[in-house]
Length: 401
Ligand SMILES: Nc1ncnc2c1ncn2[C@@H]1O[C@H](COP(=O)(O)OP(=O)(O)OP(=O)(O)O)[C@@H](O)[C@H]1O
Image 1: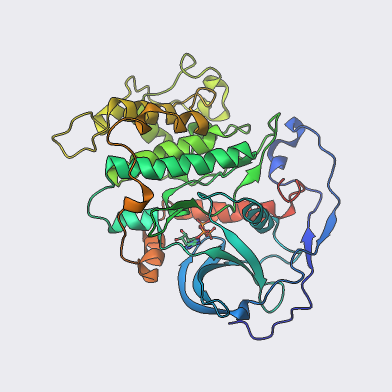
Image 2: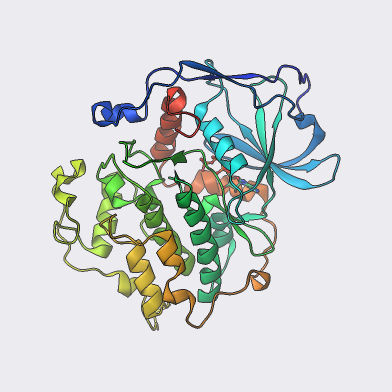
């Protein structure tokens, strides 16, 4: 654990330069908002406990932006997850992306959103930890360890919880912007929780132009891949379509290696879009490239109503929901609220109750890390996401901005 704790030195200074780097991509198009003060002092860490009050048990995972440990609260004996916020490159103050994540998670309370109990401090203010409820698995690691995919009723149980969590986020004007199976945690009580709000941000109406370099490639919506700078909740819904398909088949739906390859994979399966099905498509910046015109939507072949080939079976209602999530035109893509009311959840097999969800042996921490190293969709992608987060450090959009 940290040695030289200094709990009296708990003020942190947030550096917010006057360059709004994320929105800067096309700032002339942006809705003008009052400029934020260049320097804000946040005393949110005053009175925080020290990380020494926790016994670190093992490293669970090391992500792009933080290390996650399993730990025990020495006072209560409670097992928790400690996410250490990486600060090594921040000379100017506390990284705003981390503040966004902490702020969102501390203020949001929902059964499908991972609960951050408190923030604790290490030696200096260059080590900050989020104390979270401990979840035994993430869905990516779990599916890699499973021999069979989840059953339809299990997928329904997971998707219901997921839609409820995403509806809560969208109702509160927050886009997650990085929904993927490794950011979905599952405990041995069948509860699913969304984690990693490092790319999340609040959005408003009217929409401002944001960077399109968000969402891990495999789960990235076509409007982002095609360079749209104005986007909204529909980007999260596309990711949920990819996740639903992956839960049913245990394989990622579109595992592209580059942005072009990703679009190509999508077009081959869903058909190449056009102005008729997606008005405005031809005006997107990325449509300058000449894509091969695939005429047909072959998604039903991957998820047939009956199967003798081992493909995952999906009823007409289930397929309708999947299609509505993977709709090209973001305006027509289904919302989380409508997805929750979809007939698929009311037909047999009914969603499994959480209490009857299977439990799984604990994943070895090493497995989670190895999987991350070996199965990362694209190492360059990880690097770019790192750079994006670095670039965001000077954002002036406020804690949620
Ligand atoms: N509360 C938790 N309980 C148990 N494991 C967790 C918890 N939170 C995160 N993890 C594990 O740590 C991994 C990384 O967490 P997280 O995605 O929050 O970190 P990150 O550094 O932001 O990662 P990324 O590289 O995806 O941006 C998760 O995939 C999950 O396996």
